[in-house]
Length: 583
Ligand code: AMP
Image: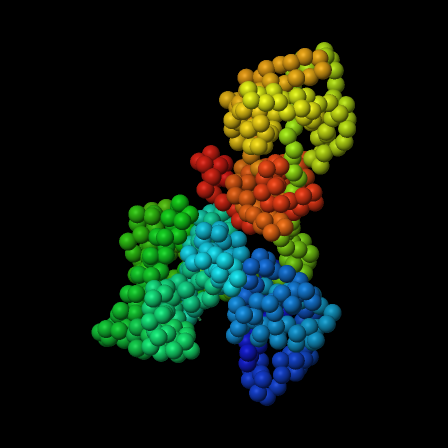
Protein backbone atom coordinates (compact mmCIF):
# COMPACT_ATOMS: atom_id res chain seq x y z
CA UNK A 1 0.00 0.00 0.00
CA UNK A 2 1.18 3.54 -0.68
CA UNK A 3 0.03 6.43 1.48
CA UNK A 4 0.36 10.13 0.71
CA UNK A 5 1.19 11.90 3.98
CA UNK A 6 0.37 15.58 4.10
CA UNK A 7 1.58 18.04 6.74
CA UNK A 8 0.03 21.36 5.86
CA UNK A 9 1.16 24.69 7.30
CA UNK A 10 -0.20 28.14 6.51
CA UNK A 11 2.27 28.80 3.69
CA UNK A 12 3.63 25.37 2.81
CA UNK A 13 2.64 21.74 2.39
CA UNK A 14 5.13 18.98 3.18
CA UNK A 15 4.31 15.67 1.56
CA UNK A 16 5.68 12.15 1.35
CA UNK A 17 4.56 8.99 -0.41
CA UNK A 18 5.35 6.06 1.88
CA UNK A 19 4.76 2.32 2.08
CA UNK A 20 3.59 2.03 5.69
CA UNK A 21 4.60 -1.62 5.94
CA UNK A 22 8.20 -1.36 4.74
CA UNK A 23 8.77 2.32 5.51
CA UNK A 24 10.05 2.81 1.95
CA UNK A 25 9.68 6.41 0.78
CA UNK A 26 8.84 6.91 -2.89
CA UNK A 27 8.50 10.68 -3.06
CA UNK A 28 8.93 13.65 -0.73
CA UNK A 29 8.87 17.39 -1.06
CA UNK A 30 7.59 20.74 0.09
CA UNK A 31 5.16 22.99 -1.77
CA UNK A 32 6.05 26.50 -0.71
CA UNK A 33 4.84 30.09 -0.84
CA UNK A 34 1.20 29.08 -0.70
CA UNK A 35 -1.25 31.88 -0.28
CA UNK A 36 1.05 34.32 -2.09
CA UNK A 37 1.60 32.77 -5.52
CA UNK A 38 -0.98 30.00 -5.57
CA UNK A 39 -3.67 28.45 -3.44
CA UNK A 40 -3.43 25.13 -1.57
CA UNK A 41 -5.84 23.67 -4.15
CA UNK A 42 -3.69 24.77 -7.09
CA UNK A 43 -0.51 23.45 -5.54
CA UNK A 44 -1.98 20.06 -4.65
CA UNK A 45 -3.81 19.84 -7.97
CA UNK A 46 -0.46 20.18 -9.75
CA UNK A 47 1.11 17.57 -7.45
CA UNK A 48 -1.49 14.93 -8.39
CA UNK A 49 -0.01 14.74 -11.88
CA UNK A 50 3.53 14.40 -10.55
CA UNK A 51 2.53 11.60 -8.18
CA UNK A 52 0.29 9.74 -10.63
CA UNK A 53 2.80 6.89 -11.09
CA UNK A 54 2.59 5.94 -7.40
CA UNK A 55 -0.88 4.37 -7.21
CA UNK A 56 -1.68 6.10 -3.93
CA UNK A 57 -4.43 4.34 -1.97
CA UNK A 58 -5.00 6.65 0.99
CA UNK A 59 -4.14 10.15 2.19
CA UNK A 60 -3.01 10.73 5.78
CA UNK A 61 -3.26 14.23 7.19
CA UNK A 62 -1.34 15.49 10.17
CA UNK A 63 -3.77 17.47 12.31
CA UNK A 64 -2.26 19.23 15.30
CA UNK A 65 -5.23 19.49 17.63
CA UNK A 66 -7.97 16.93 18.07
CA UNK A 67 -9.24 18.37 21.36
CA UNK A 68 -10.98 16.01 23.74
CA UNK A 69 -12.96 14.47 20.91
CA UNK A 70 -10.33 12.55 18.90
CA UNK A 71 -8.62 9.72 20.72
CA UNK A 72 -7.45 7.99 17.55
CA UNK A 73 -6.87 8.52 13.88
CA UNK A 74 -10.17 8.78 12.03
CA UNK A 75 -11.56 8.72 8.52
CA UNK A 76 -12.51 12.24 7.52
CA UNK A 77 -16.13 12.99 6.66
CA UNK A 78 -18.24 16.12 6.96
CA UNK A 79 -18.85 15.59 10.64
CA UNK A 80 -15.15 15.03 11.38
CA UNK A 81 -14.25 18.17 9.41
CA UNK A 82 -16.69 20.16 11.52
CA UNK A 83 -15.20 18.70 14.71
CA UNK A 84 -11.65 19.64 13.60
CA UNK A 85 -12.99 23.10 12.83
CA UNK A 86 -14.39 23.24 16.36
CA UNK A 87 -10.84 22.66 17.67
CA UNK A 88 -9.53 25.80 15.89
CA UNK A 89 -9.67 27.94 19.07
CA UNK A 90 -7.32 25.40 20.70
CA UNK A 91 -4.74 25.66 17.89
CA UNK A 92 -5.50 28.89 16.03
CA UNK A 93 -2.26 28.80 14.01
CA UNK A 94 -2.26 25.13 13.05
CA UNK A 95 -5.75 23.69 12.65
CA UNK A 96 -6.91 26.19 9.98
CA UNK A 97 -3.87 25.32 7.87
CA UNK A 98 -4.46 21.59 8.44
CA UNK A 99 -8.09 22.05 7.34
CA UNK A 100 -7.02 23.93 4.20
CA UNK A 101 -4.74 21.01 3.35
CA UNK A 102 -7.50 18.46 3.90
CA UNK A 103 -9.96 20.35 1.70
CA UNK A 104 -7.41 20.82 -1.07
CA UNK A 105 -6.38 17.16 -0.95
CA UNK A 106 -10.00 16.00 -0.98
CA UNK A 107 -10.51 18.06 -4.13
CA UNK A 108 -7.36 16.58 -5.67
CA UNK A 109 -8.13 12.99 -4.60
CA UNK A 110 -11.92 12.82 -4.32
CA UNK A 111 -12.05 9.02 -4.52
CA UNK A 112 -9.42 8.14 -1.89
CA UNK A 113 -10.00 7.73 1.84
CA UNK A 114 -8.64 10.71 3.78
CA UNK A 115 -7.53 10.03 7.33
CA UNK A 116 -6.79 12.58 10.06
CA UNK A 117 -3.95 11.68 12.45
CA UNK A 118 -3.84 13.94 15.49
CA UNK A 119 -0.77 15.10 17.46
CA UNK A 120 -2.94 15.08 20.56
CA UNK A 121 -4.69 11.73 20.12
CA UNK A 122 -2.02 9.62 21.74
CA UNK A 123 -2.47 11.57 24.99
CA UNK A 124 -6.26 11.56 24.88
CA UNK A 125 -6.42 9.01 27.66
CA UNK A 126 -4.27 10.94 30.09
CA UNK A 127 -5.65 10.24 33.55
CA UNK A 128 -7.74 13.08 34.89
CA UNK A 129 -5.22 13.70 37.63
CA UNK A 130 -2.58 14.32 34.95
CA UNK A 131 -4.67 16.36 32.56
CA UNK A 132 -6.32 18.66 35.11
CA UNK A 133 -4.98 22.11 35.93
CA UNK A 134 -5.68 23.07 39.52
CA UNK A 135 -8.06 25.92 38.72
CA UNK A 136 -11.81 26.41 39.01
CA UNK A 137 -13.22 23.39 37.20
CA UNK A 138 -16.32 25.07 35.86
CA UNK A 139 -14.17 27.67 34.19
CA UNK A 140 -11.76 25.02 32.96
CA UNK A 141 -14.59 23.04 31.35
CA UNK A 142 -16.19 26.12 29.81
CA UNK A 143 -12.94 27.11 28.11
CA UNK A 144 -11.45 23.64 27.40
CA UNK A 145 -8.57 24.44 29.73
CA UNK A 146 -6.85 21.14 30.35
CA UNK A 147 -3.65 19.42 29.36
CA UNK A 148 -3.75 17.82 25.90
CA UNK A 149 -0.13 17.01 25.00
CA UNK A 150 1.44 16.99 21.53
CA UNK A 151 4.13 15.22 19.47
CA UNK A 152 1.98 12.07 19.68
CA UNK A 153 3.16 10.56 16.39
CA UNK A 154 6.79 10.92 17.44
CA UNK A 155 6.38 9.56 20.96
CA UNK A 156 4.31 6.66 19.62
CA UNK A 157 6.78 5.82 16.87
CA UNK A 158 9.95 5.83 18.96
CA UNK A 159 8.38 3.98 21.89
CA UNK A 160 7.23 1.27 19.50
CA UNK A 161 10.74 0.99 18.04
CA UNK A 162 12.14 0.56 21.56
CA UNK A 163 9.62 -2.20 22.31
CA UNK A 164 10.47 -3.98 19.05
CA UNK A 165 14.17 -3.77 19.89
CA UNK A 166 13.47 -5.28 23.32
CA UNK A 167 11.48 -8.03 21.63
CA UNK A 168 8.34 -7.30 23.61
CA UNK A 169 5.10 -5.38 23.45
CA UNK A 170 4.66 -1.80 24.60
CA UNK A 171 1.91 -3.22 26.81
CA UNK A 172 4.61 -4.86 28.92
CA UNK A 173 6.75 -1.75 29.34
CA UNK A 174 7.03 1.52 31.20
CA UNK A 175 8.84 3.89 28.86
CA UNK A 176 9.85 7.55 29.02
CA UNK A 177 10.26 9.15 25.60
CA UNK A 178 12.03 12.49 25.22
CA UNK A 179 11.41 14.27 21.94
CA UNK A 180 14.17 16.91 22.02
CA UNK A 181 14.08 19.08 18.92
CA UNK A 182 13.30 22.70 18.36
CA UNK A 183 10.02 21.78 20.03
CA UNK A 184 10.55 19.41 22.94
CA UNK A 185 8.35 17.21 25.09
CA UNK A 186 8.53 14.20 27.36
CA UNK A 187 6.01 11.39 27.60
CA UNK A 188 5.45 8.62 30.13
CA UNK A 189 4.05 5.53 28.39
CA UNK A 190 2.78 3.08 30.94
CA UNK A 191 1.97 -0.30 29.41
CA UNK A 192 1.27 1.36 26.07
CA UNK A 193 -0.80 4.32 27.30
CA UNK A 194 0.43 7.89 27.59
CA UNK A 195 -0.17 8.69 31.27
CA UNK A 196 1.85 11.92 31.44
CA UNK A 197 3.30 14.32 28.93
CA UNK A 198 5.04 17.62 29.37
CA UNK A 199 3.24 19.80 26.83
CA UNK A 200 -0.13 20.94 28.10
CA UNK A 201 -3.07 22.89 26.76
CA UNK A 202 -0.59 24.36 24.28
CA UNK A 203 2.93 23.29 23.24
CA UNK A 204 4.37 25.98 25.53
CA UNK A 205 4.46 23.91 28.72
CA UNK A 206 7.18 21.55 29.88
CA UNK A 207 10.75 21.17 28.71
CA UNK A 208 13.04 24.00 27.64
CA UNK A 209 12.75 24.32 23.84
CA UNK A 210 14.57 26.12 21.05
CA UNK A 211 12.60 29.33 21.51
CA UNK A 212 9.80 28.34 23.96
CA UNK A 213 10.21 28.73 27.69
CA UNK A 214 8.53 25.54 28.84
CA UNK A 215 7.44 25.48 32.51
CA UNK A 216 7.07 28.84 34.22
CA UNK A 217 5.50 30.12 37.39
CA UNK A 218 2.17 31.53 36.14
CA UNK A 219 3.10 34.59 38.18
CA UNK A 220 5.94 35.23 35.72
CA UNK A 221 3.43 35.33 32.87
CA UNK A 222 1.22 37.77 34.76
CA UNK A 223 4.16 39.99 35.58
CA UNK A 224 5.41 39.98 31.98
CA UNK A 225 1.91 40.63 30.66
CA UNK A 226 1.67 43.67 32.94
CA UNK A 227 5.03 44.96 31.77
CA UNK A 228 4.87 44.10 28.08
CA UNK A 229 1.23 43.51 27.22
CA UNK A 230 -0.35 40.18 26.23
CA UNK A 231 0.79 39.98 22.60
CA UNK A 232 4.41 40.84 23.33
CA UNK A 233 4.45 38.35 26.20
CA UNK A 234 3.05 35.61 23.97
CA UNK A 235 5.69 36.38 21.36
CA UNK A 236 8.45 36.45 23.98
CA UNK A 237 7.52 33.11 25.52
CA UNK A 238 7.04 31.32 22.19
CA UNK A 239 9.69 32.89 19.98
CA UNK A 240 12.37 34.49 22.13
CA UNK A 241 12.75 32.19 25.12
CA UNK A 242 14.13 28.70 25.72
CA UNK A 243 17.69 28.00 24.55
CA UNK A 244 17.65 31.20 22.47
CA UNK A 245 16.38 33.32 25.35
CA UNK A 246 18.83 32.06 27.96
CA UNK A 247 21.88 31.99 25.72
CA UNK A 248 21.19 35.25 23.91
CA UNK A 249 22.34 33.35 20.82
CA UNK A 250 20.06 31.55 18.38
CA UNK A 251 18.04 28.37 18.95
CA UNK A 252 20.59 26.06 17.30
CA UNK A 253 22.12 23.85 19.97
CA UNK A 254 25.20 23.24 17.82
CA UNK A 255 26.04 26.91 17.92
CA UNK A 256 25.28 27.10 21.64
CA UNK A 257 27.56 24.13 22.32
CA UNK A 258 30.38 25.77 20.38
CA UNK A 259 29.93 29.02 22.30
CA UNK A 260 29.83 27.15 25.61
CA UNK A 261 33.11 25.42 24.77
CA UNK A 262 34.61 28.88 24.32
CA UNK A 263 33.38 29.95 27.74
CA UNK A 264 30.15 31.81 26.81
CA UNK A 265 28.26 32.03 30.10
CA UNK A 266 24.77 32.30 28.60
CA UNK A 267 25.40 29.28 26.39
CA UNK A 268 26.57 27.22 29.36
CA UNK A 269 23.56 28.22 31.40
CA UNK A 270 21.19 27.37 28.52
CA UNK A 271 22.66 23.87 28.24
CA UNK A 272 22.52 23.33 31.99
CA UNK A 273 18.91 24.48 32.34
CA UNK A 274 17.85 22.38 29.33
CA UNK A 275 19.49 19.21 30.69
CA UNK A 276 18.33 19.80 34.27
CA UNK A 277 14.70 20.20 33.18
CA UNK A 278 14.81 17.03 31.08
CA UNK A 279 16.42 15.02 33.92
CA UNK A 280 13.84 16.33 36.35
CA UNK A 281 11.06 15.03 34.11
CA UNK A 282 12.67 11.59 33.88
CA UNK A 283 12.67 11.32 37.66
CA UNK A 284 9.12 12.58 37.90
CA UNK A 285 7.80 10.23 35.24
CA UNK A 286 9.55 7.21 36.75
CA UNK A 287 7.78 8.10 39.99
CA UNK A 288 4.44 8.56 38.22
CA UNK A 289 4.71 5.09 36.69
CA UNK A 290 6.21 3.49 39.80
CA UNK A 291 9.08 2.12 37.76
CA UNK A 292 10.86 2.27 34.45
CA UNK A 293 12.01 -0.16 31.77
CA UNK A 294 13.37 2.09 29.03
CA UNK A 295 14.22 5.68 28.11
CA UNK A 296 14.15 6.82 24.49
CA UNK A 297 15.74 10.02 23.17
CA UNK A 298 14.78 11.44 19.81
CA UNK A 299 14.43 14.70 17.84
CA UNK A 300 17.31 16.75 16.41
CA UNK A 301 18.96 17.14 19.83
CA UNK A 302 18.13 13.70 21.22
CA UNK A 303 19.37 11.98 18.07
CA UNK A 304 22.50 14.05 17.52
CA UNK A 305 23.88 15.64 20.65
CA UNK A 306 25.94 13.16 22.68
CA UNK A 307 27.02 15.84 25.20
CA UNK A 308 23.40 16.80 25.89
CA UNK A 309 22.38 13.15 26.26
CA UNK A 310 25.19 12.61 28.76
CA UNK A 311 24.18 15.64 30.81
CA UNK A 312 20.54 14.58 30.89
CA UNK A 313 21.24 10.96 31.77
CA UNK A 314 23.89 11.47 34.43
CA UNK A 315 23.16 10.60 38.06
CA UNK A 316 20.23 8.36 37.18
CA UNK A 317 21.98 5.17 38.35
CA UNK A 318 19.57 4.98 41.30
CA UNK A 319 16.83 4.29 38.75
CA UNK A 320 18.87 1.61 37.02
CA UNK A 321 19.79 3.94 34.14
CA UNK A 322 23.44 3.60 33.18
CA UNK A 323 24.96 4.86 29.95
CA UNK A 324 27.99 3.49 28.15
CA UNK A 325 29.76 6.74 27.22
CA UNK A 326 31.57 5.16 24.27
CA UNK A 327 28.27 4.00 22.84
CA UNK A 328 26.76 7.41 23.55
CA UNK A 329 29.56 9.05 21.55
CA UNK A 330 29.19 6.52 18.72
CA UNK A 331 25.41 6.62 18.51
CA UNK A 332 24.15 7.36 15.05
CA UNK A 333 20.65 6.75 13.75
CA UNK A 334 18.82 7.12 10.45
CA UNK A 335 15.50 6.14 8.89
CA UNK A 336 17.17 2.96 7.63
CA UNK A 337 18.80 2.12 10.95
CA UNK A 338 16.67 3.94 13.49
CA UNK A 339 17.65 2.44 16.87
CA UNK A 340 20.93 2.68 18.81
CA UNK A 341 21.28 1.18 22.31
CA UNK A 342 23.52 3.36 24.48
CA UNK A 343 22.96 1.48 27.78
CA UNK A 344 25.86 -0.08 29.62
CA UNK A 345 25.76 -3.85 30.00
CA UNK A 346 24.86 -3.51 33.70
CA UNK A 347 21.92 -1.15 33.17
CA UNK A 348 18.55 -2.36 34.44
CA UNK A 349 16.80 0.30 32.36
CA UNK A 350 17.62 0.37 28.65
CA UNK A 351 18.37 3.70 27.00
CA UNK A 352 17.90 4.05 23.27
CA UNK A 353 18.54 6.77 20.74
CA UNK A 354 15.85 6.45 18.07
CA UNK A 355 15.42 8.35 14.81
CA UNK A 356 11.85 9.57 14.85
CA UNK A 357 9.74 9.33 11.71
CA UNK A 358 6.45 11.07 12.22
CA UNK A 359 5.47 10.71 8.55
CA UNK A 360 5.88 6.94 8.70
CA UNK A 361 3.82 6.82 11.88
CA UNK A 362 1.10 8.88 10.19
CA UNK A 363 1.25 6.54 7.18
CA UNK A 364 0.92 3.49 9.45
CA UNK A 365 -2.07 4.90 11.29
CA UNK A 366 -3.62 5.99 8.01
CA UNK A 367 -3.24 2.49 6.57
CA UNK A 368 -4.80 0.94 9.67
CA UNK A 369 -7.87 3.14 9.53
CA UNK A 370 -8.17 3.05 5.73
CA UNK A 371 -7.84 -0.74 5.86
CA UNK A 372 -10.79 -0.75 8.20
CA UNK A 373 -9.24 -3.13 10.69
CA UNK A 374 -9.13 -0.69 13.58
CA UNK A 375 -11.81 1.82 12.87
CA UNK A 376 -11.03 3.50 16.12
CA UNK A 377 -11.62 0.58 18.32
CA UNK A 378 -10.88 2.49 21.50
CA UNK A 379 -13.77 4.74 20.69
CA UNK A 380 -16.14 1.79 20.50
CA UNK A 381 -18.69 2.59 23.18
CA UNK A 382 -19.26 0.06 25.92
CA UNK A 383 -22.89 -0.98 26.41
CA UNK A 384 -23.93 -0.66 30.02
CA UNK A 385 -26.17 -3.20 31.73
CA UNK A 386 -27.80 -2.22 34.99
CA UNK A 387 -28.08 -5.21 37.32
CA UNK A 388 -30.89 -5.14 39.78
CA UNK A 389 -30.39 -7.19 42.95
CA UNK A 390 -30.25 -10.88 42.12
CA UNK A 391 -29.39 -14.32 43.46
CA UNK A 392 -27.18 -17.18 42.25
CA UNK A 393 -27.84 -20.52 43.96
CA UNK A 394 -25.89 -23.74 44.32
CA UNK A 395 -27.52 -27.17 44.11
CA UNK A 396 -27.96 -27.59 47.86
CA UNK A 397 -29.66 -24.21 48.28
CA UNK A 398 -31.91 -24.91 45.31
CA UNK A 399 -33.00 -28.20 46.88
CA UNK A 400 -33.61 -26.55 50.26
CA UNK A 401 -35.55 -23.57 48.92
CA UNK A 402 -37.54 -25.16 46.07
CA UNK A 403 -37.57 -28.89 46.87
CA UNK A 404 -35.24 -31.79 46.23
CA UNK A 405 -34.18 -32.02 42.55
CA UNK A 406 -36.05 -28.91 41.44
CA UNK A 407 -34.72 -26.90 38.48
CA UNK A 408 -34.73 -23.23 37.55
CA UNK A 409 -37.20 -22.47 34.77
CA UNK A 410 -36.28 -20.13 31.94
CA UNK A 411 -37.78 -16.64 32.01
CA UNK A 412 -35.46 -14.85 29.57
CA UNK A 413 -31.90 -14.92 28.23
CA UNK A 414 -29.34 -12.50 29.62
CA UNK A 415 -26.81 -10.78 27.43
CA UNK A 416 -23.89 -12.93 28.56
CA UNK A 417 -24.09 -16.19 26.60
CA UNK A 418 -25.59 -19.11 28.55
CA UNK A 419 -26.90 -16.93 31.38
CA UNK A 420 -30.62 -16.56 31.98
CA UNK A 421 -33.13 -14.98 34.31
CA UNK A 422 -35.39 -17.62 35.86
CA UNK A 423 -39.02 -17.46 36.92
CA UNK A 424 -38.01 -18.43 40.45
CA UNK A 425 -37.67 -15.84 43.19
CA UNK A 426 -36.72 -15.79 46.86
CA UNK A 427 -37.02 -13.34 49.73
CA UNK A 428 -33.88 -11.88 51.32
CA UNK A 429 -34.07 -11.46 55.09
CA UNK A 430 -31.57 -9.42 57.08
CA UNK A 431 -31.47 -8.24 60.70
CA UNK A 432 -33.30 -4.99 59.89
CA UNK A 433 -35.59 -5.84 57.03
CA UNK A 434 -36.74 -8.02 54.18
CA UNK A 435 -36.62 -7.66 50.39
CA UNK A 436 -39.22 -9.79 48.64
CA UNK A 437 -39.28 -11.63 45.31
CA UNK A 438 -35.64 -11.29 44.27
CA UNK A 439 -35.00 -13.03 40.97
CA UNK A 440 -32.68 -16.01 40.66
CA UNK A 441 -30.28 -16.10 37.71
CA UNK A 442 -29.29 -19.38 36.11
CA UNK A 443 -27.62 -21.71 35.66
CA UNK A 444 -26.83 -22.99 39.17
CA UNK A 445 -23.31 -22.23 40.41
CA UNK A 446 -20.79 -24.01 42.66
CA UNK A 447 -21.53 -21.50 45.46
CA UNK A 448 -24.38 -19.17 46.40
CA UNK A 449 -23.84 -15.50 45.65
CA UNK A 450 -26.36 -12.78 46.37
CA UNK A 451 -25.70 -9.38 44.82
CA UNK A 452 -27.36 -6.29 46.25
CA UNK A 453 -26.84 -2.54 46.09
CA UNK A 454 -25.70 -0.35 48.98
CA UNK A 455 -29.28 0.92 49.34
CA UNK A 456 -30.50 -2.68 49.67
CA UNK A 457 -27.93 -3.26 52.40
CA UNK A 458 -29.47 -0.46 54.47
CA UNK A 459 -32.88 -2.04 54.10
CA UNK A 460 -31.55 -5.42 55.13
CA UNK A 461 -29.31 -4.06 57.89
CA UNK A 462 -26.14 -5.74 56.64
CA UNK A 463 -22.76 -4.48 55.51
CA UNK A 464 -21.65 -6.49 52.48
CA UNK A 465 -18.16 -6.16 51.03
CA UNK A 466 -17.56 -4.96 47.45
CA UNK A 467 -16.34 -8.05 45.66
CA UNK A 468 -15.74 -9.40 42.19
CA UNK A 469 -18.02 -12.25 41.23
CA UNK A 470 -17.02 -15.61 42.68
CA UNK A 471 -15.11 -14.13 45.64
CA UNK A 472 -17.64 -14.85 48.38
CA UNK A 473 -15.36 -16.19 51.10
CA UNK A 474 -15.73 -13.98 54.18
CA UNK A 475 -18.60 -12.00 52.66
CA UNK A 476 -21.77 -11.06 54.58
CA UNK A 477 -24.41 -13.49 55.97
CA UNK A 478 -27.99 -13.54 54.70
CA UNK A 479 -31.17 -15.56 55.10
CA UNK A 480 -33.05 -16.80 52.00
CA UNK A 481 -36.72 -17.71 52.10
CA UNK A 482 -38.18 -19.92 49.35
CA UNK A 483 -41.49 -21.72 48.81
CA UNK A 484 -40.07 -24.94 50.23
CA UNK A 485 -37.97 -23.69 53.11
CA UNK A 486 -35.60 -21.12 54.59
CA UNK A 487 -31.82 -21.28 54.74
CA UNK A 488 -29.31 -19.12 56.51
CA UNK A 489 -26.01 -18.54 54.68
CA UNK A 490 -23.01 -17.51 56.81
CA UNK A 491 -21.52 -15.89 53.73
CA UNK A 492 -22.52 -15.11 50.12
CA UNK A 493 -23.93 -11.58 50.21
CA UNK A 494 -21.84 -9.07 48.25
CA UNK A 495 -22.08 -5.69 46.60
CA UNK A 496 -20.73 -6.41 43.12
CA UNK A 497 -17.54 -4.72 41.99
CA UNK A 498 -18.42 -2.81 38.83
CA UNK A 499 -16.83 -4.55 35.91
CA UNK A 500 -16.65 -4.89 32.14
CA UNK A 501 -17.01 -8.24 30.39
CA UNK A 502 -15.02 -8.40 27.18
CA UNK A 503 -13.48 -10.83 24.72
CA UNK A 504 -9.75 -11.18 24.08
CA UNK A 505 -10.22 -9.19 20.88
CA UNK A 506 -12.02 -6.40 22.73
CA UNK A 507 -9.24 -6.36 25.33
CA UNK A 508 -6.62 -6.05 22.61
CA UNK A 509 -8.56 -3.24 20.95
CA UNK A 510 -8.88 -1.30 24.20
CA UNK A 511 -5.30 -2.11 25.20
CA UNK A 512 -6.25 -3.76 28.49
CA UNK A 513 -5.87 -7.15 30.16
CA UNK A 514 -7.92 -9.33 32.47
CA UNK A 515 -7.70 -7.86 35.97
CA UNK A 516 -6.92 -4.30 34.84
CA UNK A 517 -8.66 -1.39 36.50
CA UNK A 518 -9.98 1.23 34.12
CA UNK A 519 -12.08 4.37 34.11
CA UNK A 520 -15.34 4.56 32.20
CA UNK A 521 -17.06 7.86 31.50
CA UNK A 522 -20.79 8.08 30.99
CA UNK A 523 -23.00 10.94 29.95
CA UNK A 524 -26.25 11.03 31.84
CA UNK A 525 -28.93 13.65 31.75
CA UNK A 526 -26.97 16.37 33.47
CA UNK A 527 -25.24 13.82 35.71
CA UNK A 528 -22.10 12.99 33.73
CA UNK A 529 -19.96 10.65 35.73
CA UNK A 530 -16.64 8.87 35.43
CA UNK A 531 -16.53 5.52 37.18
CA UNK A 532 -13.08 4.64 38.49
CA UNK A 533 -12.01 1.19 39.71
CA UNK A 534 -13.84 -0.64 36.94
CA UNK A 535 -12.56 -4.20 36.77
CA UNK A 536 -11.82 -5.69 33.35
CA UNK A 537 -12.84 -9.35 32.96
CA UNK A 538 -11.72 -11.07 29.79
CA UNK A 539 -13.04 -14.35 28.40
CA UNK A 540 -13.80 -15.26 24.83
CA UNK A 541 -17.29 -16.41 25.76
CA UNK A 542 -18.16 -12.95 27.11
CA UNK A 543 -20.00 -10.21 25.31
CA UNK A 544 -18.78 -6.62 25.62
CA UNK A 545 -20.76 -5.05 28.44
CA UNK A 546 -20.21 -3.06 31.61
CA UNK A 547 -22.19 -4.16 34.66
CA UNK A 548 -23.19 -1.68 37.32
CA UNK A 549 -25.84 -1.83 40.01
CA UNK A 550 -28.92 0.32 40.37
CA UNK A 551 -27.29 2.78 42.80
CA UNK A 552 -24.46 3.36 40.37
CA UNK A 553 -26.86 3.79 37.45
CA UNK A 554 -29.01 6.23 39.37
CA UNK A 555 -25.99 8.28 40.38
CA UNK A 556 -25.39 8.91 36.68
CA UNK A 557 -29.08 9.08 35.70
CA UNK A 558 -28.58 6.14 33.35
CA UNK A 559 -31.30 4.04 31.87
CA UNK A 560 -31.55 1.04 29.58
CA UNK A 561 -29.43 1.29 26.42
CA UNK A 562 -26.80 3.60 27.97
CA UNK A 563 -23.19 3.34 26.89
CA UNK A 564 -19.87 4.46 28.36
CA UNK A 565 -16.43 5.30 26.98
CA UNK A 566 -13.26 3.76 28.31
CA UNK A 567 -11.19 6.78 29.21
CA UNK A 568 -7.97 5.33 30.54
CA UNK A 569 -6.28 2.41 32.10
CA UNK A 570 -5.37 2.76 35.72
CA UNK A 571 -2.64 0.93 37.52
CA UNK A 572 -3.33 2.21 40.96
CA UNK A 573 -5.45 -0.69 41.99
CA UNK A 574 -4.20 -2.84 44.83
CA UNK A 575 -1.02 -4.83 44.55
CA UNK A 576 -2.80 -7.90 43.29
CA UNK A 577 -4.07 -6.02 40.31
CA UNK A 578 -0.69 -4.57 39.44
CA UNK A 579 0.89 -8.01 39.69
CA UNK A 580 -1.80 -9.45 37.51
CA UNK A 581 -1.13 -6.95 34.78
CA UNK A 582 2.63 -7.48 34.98
CA UNK A 583 2.26 -11.25 34.87
P1 AMP B 1 14.35 19.21 15.20
O1 AMP B 1 13.35 20.25 15.57
O2 AMP B 1 13.99 17.83 15.69
O3 AMP B 1 14.76 19.24 13.77
O4 AMP B 1 15.69 19.56 16.01
C1 AMP B 1 16.38 20.76 15.82
C2 AMP B 1 17.39 20.94 16.93
O5 AMP B 1 18.34 19.87 16.87
C3 AMP B 1 18.18 22.23 16.81
O6 AMP B 1 18.29 22.83 18.08
C4 AMP B 1 19.53 21.76 16.37
O7 AMP B 1 20.50 22.62 16.82
C5 AMP B 1 19.64 20.42 17.05
N1 AMP B 1 20.67 19.59 16.46
C6 AMP B 1 20.70 18.98 15.27
N2 AMP B 1 21.88 18.34 15.08
C7 AMP B 1 22.64 18.55 16.21
C8 AMP B 1 23.93 18.15 16.66
N3 AMP B 1 24.72 17.40 15.91
N4 AMP B 1 24.32 18.56 17.87
C9 AMP B 1 23.54 19.32 18.63
N5 AMP B 1 22.32 19.72 18.28
C10 AMP B 1 21.85 19.33 17.09
